[in-house]
Length: 70
Image 1 (cartoon, rainbow, N blue to C red):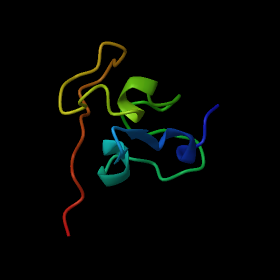
Image 2 (cartoon, rainbow, N blue to C red):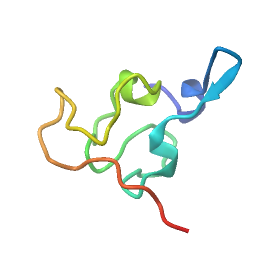
Image 3 (cartoon, rainbow, N blue to C red):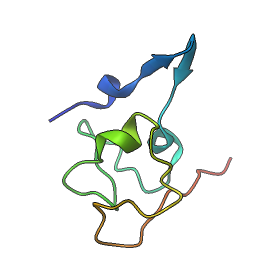
Image 4 (cartoon, one colour):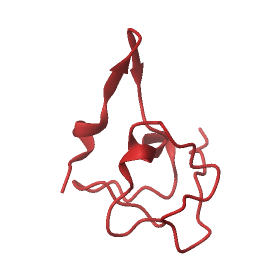
């Protein structure tokens, strides 16, 4: 299983940081999991290709990205 640091990628000379790092539902563990994806967050969310403010096709619950405030 992938580790969190595997999902920092560069695009057009910019650092693409996945939403998960700023989400209250992130489990903050070594492996990339959250309340929405207990077995592992899909790669297209981690790479920023999918906006998780919308329900993901592989998701079987209604938990979405919620920004950490403060």
